[in-house]
Image (spheres, rainbow, N blue to C red):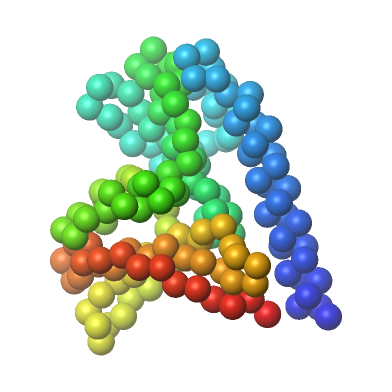
Length: 160
């Protein structure tokens, strides 16, 4: 019973966070909102990526329990250029063998977990996806010992 209650409360918290994000994101307008507005609404980013054009991209991950990672790109004039969820099928499809860990992190944001498999001589990063009815779904990126992508995969865990 305690486990069921814990799962229920966790689901409610995740739904509340998603609802809060939806409202907050609607308040942020590309071309109008400033970097100050973004920080005011979303807080301090997990990481800041500097771009060649003078803009910066701020990472706001909802991992390990959420299923989104928002990337907010702020122009050199401190105006929001765009804000988007990085965890999409289109971004997953962009990852190619040979990519570095930094390239993957920059595209998808901080992973939910990092696991080392010494016998396979690989490290696997994963990101939580929107669940099916009773199944947790994860997108996985596999790296070799040099920190280069070898392949990607999906995995599932049955809940309960």
